[in-house]
Image 1 (cartoon, rainbow, N blue to C red):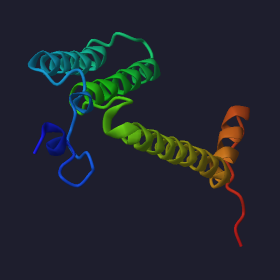
Image 2: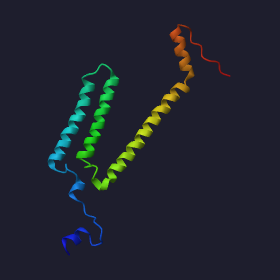
Image 3: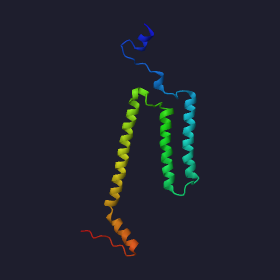
Length: 143
């Protein structure tokens, strides 16, 4: 059998993995780079919280979420070896589909929770208005 026959797996189909499928970072240096970046991207949020770097906790939370997103990308590139060419582009397509579902689920959940809070708690709104006006809090009548 020739080298081409071995590459075709004897059935006319190329089932072999090519070097470009593995990705450019499948070396010891690539793994070390990913590891160092991961440790750094884990240590920075810890430092932000423990050092109370920002006055507002919401600012700290947003920065930690952004660093978390960067860490996800680092893991996908350096450890999962994902790129636009891997597996003929199917990895990227499945990633985009997953991200779409996550965005829909998270935004829908936040939307529902916000509306449940404002629509299901009228007593709390009544109490808040009474407290702001300096009046007494009288719960609504129930039958």
